[in-house]
Structures are given as structure tokens and as C-alpha cells.
Length: 139
Image 1 (cartoon, rainbow, N blue to C red):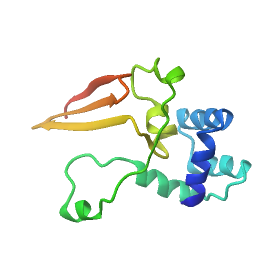
Image 2: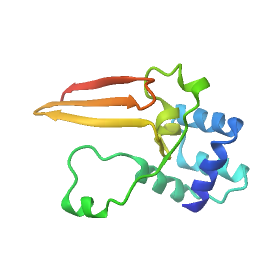
Image 3: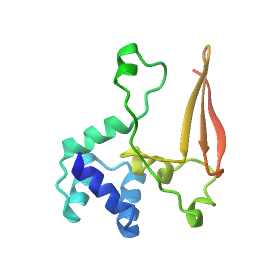
Image 4: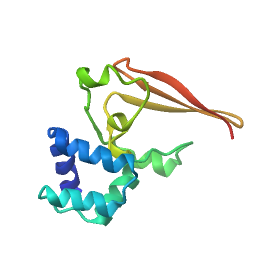
């Protein structure tokens, strides 16, 4: 997991690498392609590492069990705020949630699930004021 964290830190300071990650995320590339890209940049990341990171970064919807609540110790986020880029963002995208939701959310991104009977909605917002909207409906 340390290699993935280091790879993400590199991506956040290397616009060329971030563009490549964004392209992989947009076409929903497989874990092996992300691992291959990491290898190109000198990081030792396996397909299994990528899949484990994807599993950890996906948010849970609904209520947590008592066991889950006991295991909560924090989260993995990263400050991706760039006023030159983010000011034009009107809806959550890969910059907010990580390429292809692979790794970690921006520190400023928020997602809240609102459930009222069969009506389930998700509120997405940016603490920096870029967007604030709700999606969803009756399921």
C-alpha cells in the first residue's frame, strides 16, 4: 500500500502522470493497466494492490454495523484543490473522487446519502463552493 500512496503523491505533483491516470479512469481501465503505469514510473504495484486500494476507497452506502463503527479510525483523502482548475468544476468528477474512483477523494469533496423510505438521494458538495447538488430518487 505504501507504493500506491507514493505513486499517488507523485501523480499529484506530475501533471503528465495525472493526465494518464485520468485517461485510464475515464475508460474504466483494469487494475493491471494501473499497475503497469505505476511500473513505468518506477513503483512496484501489483494488480492485487490496486484492487485492494479500490476496495478501501469505495464509500459504504447505508448504515454501518457496530463492528464497522469500532473499526473506523479515519480516512484516506488528498488535497487536490487547484483554484485555476477547480473554479470551473460544476459537478463531481475524477479530480474530486480520484481517477476512476481508484484511490482517494479530495479533502474538499463531500458525499452524503439521504434515505427516506424508498427514496434514496446522494448530496455531492465541494467545501470550496464549486458545486452542491443532489442526485437519486426512488429505488
